[in-house]
Structure formats: structure tokens, C-alpha cells
Length: 294
Ligand code: TXA
Ligand code: MG
Image (cartoon, rainbow, N blue to C red; front, top):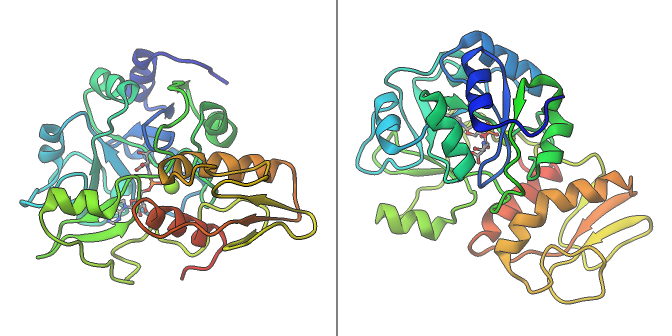
């Protein structure tokens, strides 16, 4: 298994049709050339991802994004009508494409060296929590890659916010690392709620982001054999954020779920998390990890 590749080795691997592990500010991604159907097929295979679930294409800047999709006045980091340059398989055959410009310096270096769009779903096996450290990414999909770049722990820790800009009003498809208020401030308009229509948001599968241990939410402490993930000051050994900081809780969420899971507890109980700001995305991931969302 390759460890600690450089951005230029990662770009060379992408050119050769291989998969890579790359850091982003949200979570680690499993990357492939977005316009190479064979590489993209290998990526779906390595993740065990259903073929109907489209991938996000990563590009270095807004100019590159605008060559691939049609942007209306709302579009920023978003699902837009497709123009060219990302293969059908990567879009799961849809006439739309999800585009994202990652802020992470190392991701930017890889995209700059490759010079073309890179699809990068989170580097976990389909249905499992997203990796937020290099080690966790290697454990999930390291077996499948020709290069893997270590960019340290992910600062945000939750996947990107996905917004659809394909109708008259922008729609929140996936709450994520940028909270609703931040997106609405840029749009200058409120976000419409996502339709429940699975075709519009094919990635919103019922059980997702899930550890192997059963999850119990809104808990006030551990029951027999459980690990309790606290939120706020308290005696707990495991705590999402002792100071009740939602940013810190987001950054810790997947790493703590994984660490708890490794001890094979009877279950993982999680303290209530407030719903405002980043709490919307944290609660969304927790509900899906517990298997509660249809
Ligand atoms: O933060 C992130 O976005 C990370 C890092 C690695 O960049 N990537 C990521 O990718 O979370 P993934 O594949 O795990 O999640 C992509 C989400 C899925 O829910 C997928 O269904 C949705 O974006 N998506 C992609 N293309 C779409 C499209 N054309 N229409 C609607 N949803 C789409
Ligand atoms: Mg994912």
C-alpha cells in the first residue's frame, strides 16, 4: 500500500487511470479522472457504491467548473445542468453534474497538477462513516489506490453541503460543512427544502455514515456495555465537544464514531446535539447512521 505520496505522484496516477486517496477540508476522498469511464467504474467497485448514486467532480476553480456545467446566478458549489467533460457513469447518467472547488491546499495542488476534473466521493466503503484522517482513509479504500496523499486531519469533518441549482429556487440536497445561513447569505435567498424524490438526491440512502455498532441518539448517558459520546462539560471520557462548540463536534464526529466502534461496544449512545448552524448537518448524519431516515 502506497503511503505519503506527493501531489505530482497523485496526478500521475490519475493520468494513468488509477485511483488515489486525497485530502480535502471536509473529508478524505477516493479520486479518479472524472472523464475516464474505466477508472470511474473501478472507483464504484472499490467503494461498493450503487451505480445510481452520482459522484461529485472536483475542479481547481470556478472557471473550470463553468466549462463543465451550466451556471445560473445562484450556482456556487453545486448541482447544475451538465455541459461536458465528466463521463456518464460518474453522473449516474443524469443530465446534471455536482461540482466542488475544495479549499484544501493539497487538494488544490493535485487538481492543479492534473489539470482536469477529478471525481472524489468520500473514501469510505459505501454506507460507512466518511474518513477524516489519512489512516482511516487508508483503512477503508487504501487497497484500491496507486497513490495516497496525507494532508493531516480534515478541519471540517463533515461532507460538503450539496445545493441543486436546476430550477427557479436553489434547493438543499445535503446539509454539510457550510451551514444553511452561510449558503443563504451568499445566495441572498432562502434555500428550498429538498424534495423527497430519490432521483433528485440519489445519495440520500436510508442507512448511511454508519458504524457497525448500533447507535442510540438523544441519550443522557451509557446503558450496559455502551460507549457514550457526550456534548458539553461532563465526566465522560468520550466527548464530541466539552465546550459545546458545533465546529469541534463536526470535526470529531466521524473519528469518534470510528474509534468507539473499534472497541466493539454493545452500542454507541450520543448526547443530544442542538439543531442550529452546523448542528443541522451533524443531526442529519447521526439520524442516517442510526438508520432512521427514509
Ligand atoms: O465533501 C465532499 O463533498 C466529499 C469530499 C471528498 O470532497 N465528497 C463526497 O462525495 O462527499 P460523496 O460521493 O460521498 O457524496 C456526493 C453526494 C451524494 O449524496 C450524491 O448523491 C450527490 O452528492 N450528488 C452527486 N451528483 C449529483 C447530482 N447530479 N444530482 C444530485 N445529487 C448528486
Ligand atoms: Mg460519501
